Amino acid sequence: MTHPTLAVAGPAAWPGQDALAAHRSSLDVLADPPSGLVGAPGLLALPGRGPWASPLARTLALCEAMPAALEPHGWRLGTTADGTLRRAGRTLTGDVEALALAAAGYAGPIELPVLGPLSLAAATWLPVGERVVSDDVARADLAASLALGLSRHVAAVTAARDLGVVLDGAVPSGEAAVGGDADSGAASRTGTVVLHEPMLTEVLQGAVPTFSGMSRLRALEAGVVASTIREVAEAMLAAGQVVVLAVPPDARVIDVVGPVLAAAGGGVQVDVMALDRRGMEALAQQVENGLGVRCAVVPHAAPPQAGDVPADPARIATELLQRWRWSGVVPPRLTVLPRSGVASLTPARARETLTLAARCSVALGDALA
Image 1 (spheres, rainbow, N blue to C red):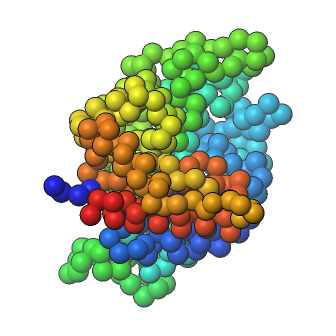
Image 2 (image 1 turned 45 degrees about the vertical axis):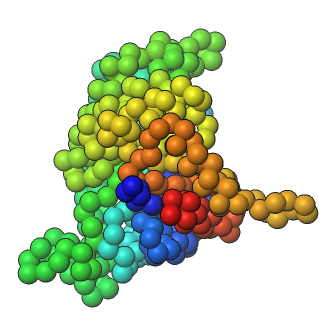
């Protein structure tokens, strides 16, 4: 039997205030993982710095020609960008530079996490009225703006990494194909864009609250959700990126987005251990159709307390593997990563959690041997 490729990935967000230190901590684990593993480092958000550093603000700052302003009830689209959104853009640029500096000498792919188009629309308000997700035209415009902005973001990250490579004494990726190996020191142009869709269940169920909170917005049809994801996924494919959708553990969500992502050569990121029987069956069926899966199952490292039993990587790996074997399918690539919420930890606990994820991946290899 052919064993799956084993990989370990990091979170989208990190605690603390220092972007360079955060990226160095992550890269220490992921850029040089234990033997037999593939590491997947990425651009980190540090939301503890302020509202301009939140995933929502960063994603809005990426959107092309879609100004917004932060109001007491949240982000609202408008005619001009306010100071918070401009600061979000500057912070994102600084984080890209911090990543490029921390990743000097690392030529592998980089993951770029952003808020997905539907959760972005559900969390953002129209210039006048309800949430963007409630307006068909505005929702489509925001998705198109995100797709264009993301394409430019990919190019900007590649350029920043190429500059770091040049300063490090290697050949930039744009020149690597001329008389040399593209992996000889140049930053890889192929990476992963992770679209985080934490509100996708509410969008499909019609459970997104209105402005007053007294009612709920209408549910979006499955076809609308699928076509919105497809638009952004196709733009990322054109930019040379693999697309992963981080979704809630919900069978219907997997049914709706799975075929789109499988057709695009992408995958979902989900807490597999939180799926019920129906959800696991849906996931297994989509994996058989070519969908990739990233398992966000690694618990957070907790401060040691008297009598506490430390998290056991072997137990986590065994339970995950049992879940897959029960489904009748083991994906050709098994990627593990921490559960969401790493940004709520201390930097030291975040580093320990990421190290635990790497140890879980090693334990998976041992269980498969």
